Image (cartoon, rainbow, N blue to C red; front, side, top):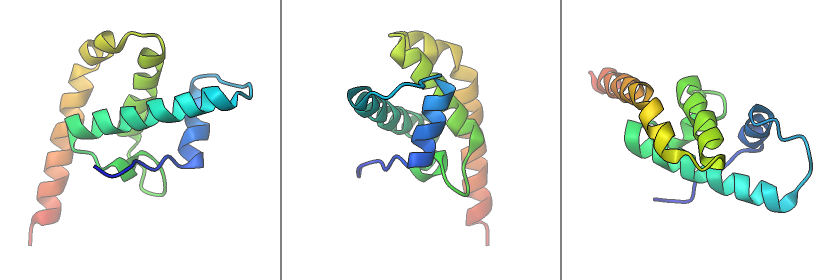
Amino acid sequence: MSAIEISEELFAEAKNYLDITWQDPDGDQKLKGQIGRGIAYISDKTGVDPSAFSGENVNRRAQGLLFNYLLYARAGAFAQFVENYAFEFNSLRRRTVVSAAKEAEP
């Protein structure tokens, strides 16, 4: 898998969601790593393209899962995230499969 690009827009939205209002270059690097790992995890489990987490055609469901992933990951509660959001993962995976099937139709 190629490196995941984290846009400044996504990074700013994540910091806002997490109520991070202070400047901390080391903390920013750590958060960018968490965002990248979250995008990779959610993309792997749902089939959502990594580019859908920000930009013009943002998938708000995927982005919402990412922001909640960040909350749980930063609290050291990844296992609870997986358990608490299983329904959302399944729902997003179904939507992704249906969307892909519609795009593949002639």
